[in-house]
Amino acid sequence: MQSLPPLAIPVTIVMAVVFVGAIIAFLRDRGRFSGYKNLMADALRLGKSLSGEVFRDGQDLVVSGTYSNRPVQVRFSHSENTPGLNIRLGAPSNINLFLGPRSAKAKEGRILLRTPDEMFNTRVEARSDHPTQAKLLLSSRGVMPALTKLCRSSNTYIRVTTGMVELIDLAPPSPSTVTNVRVQLESLNALAAPLAEMPGAEKVRVEPLKRERRLMLRAAIAAGVVAAAGAVLIAVQSSKTPAHSQIMRKDVSAEIARTDAAIIPGANKWHVASESSFDPDGTTWLRAQKIAVAGRVSADFAGAGAQSDAAYVLESSGEKKRVVILSHSERIYDASFNYVGIAARVPKAVISSIEWAGTPPANPDGDGLLLTRAPHDRASGIIIFRQGGRIISAVPKDYQTIRLE
Image (cartoon, rainbow, N blue to C red; front, side):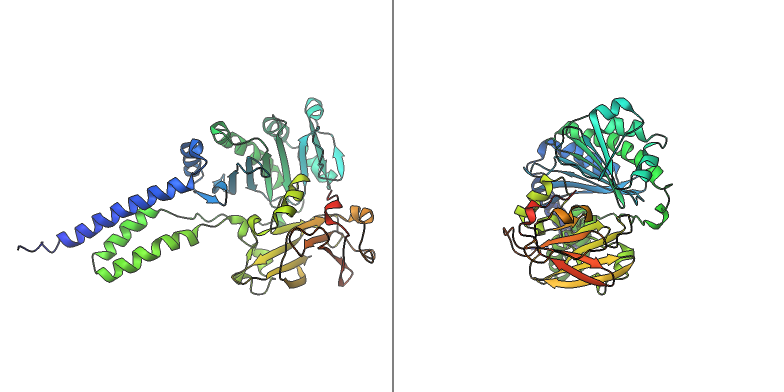
């Protein structure tokens, strides 16, 4: 029997691996867009235009990339308690500003503001904890036209918080939702630009988003070329490629800010807890108050008048979670917990209205950090405060009776 030419063997191997890679890529895309088939083509185009990637995060479809040199994440969701569309654009913001329909029951921001556009004021309510800076932003050139374009629906909310501007749309996602994202990003970017000119904005560092490459087909081709040199390398490479691709897929929100990581010992061994890590009962309660569910919480623990402090719920390969509170660039609290159901800012202004299970907190400096220590247990809450040079805590009778505004 005539043997195959030497060149035919590696060529055959490469073709076989390419074929297998194509099948894997097809199956991956099929799973990635399960439940979102009608958004597939538009989402892929959006990911390409943002020089980013499209991936699944639990039940949500996420597009992560860069717009106008700013990190951006676009999330589509069919989940009952999650907005249909959420756009987060990195921006050097050191203030907060919240805009939503006047009919909305939950309100963020202590101070009600009037914008320069009276017609806009009849439909949309603007609130902030930093009224002077917020008014300066609202009077900046191009801001009101951008807000008018964004706030066309009674389902739409705009949030400006530390390090980002955000759009929340409660309506279920549709193909038109995806095609409108580019227009909405343009308007969000018009808000981000004047934020860079605000006093103190230079202290806010917006980390650039690193592009995550998950091109399975190219990885399979590369594995085939290596395989031509030896069957052993084929086996090793083909077994590692899919797992490696999954490791590379990550959400930018899981990263600890570089300035914060510098003062958190062993930060490289931890990542910020994702929304799926928290108690569903608690997260439903937070969303009902229009509070974002996240492992990083901005607050004013020192009572300085601006939410420039931060608290992190961190997780690693172990079962325990780590809670770190940073204030004025110092680590003031660092402890391990067997369980953390939610984490949320408790404004100092609402402390007097809380019903406590024990001794109330004695005149804390600023905001508190609410944590829950058992699933589905409304009495498991604890609120941690800063008081001078020490940490104090108090336990509410029912954390879900607290108004986080």
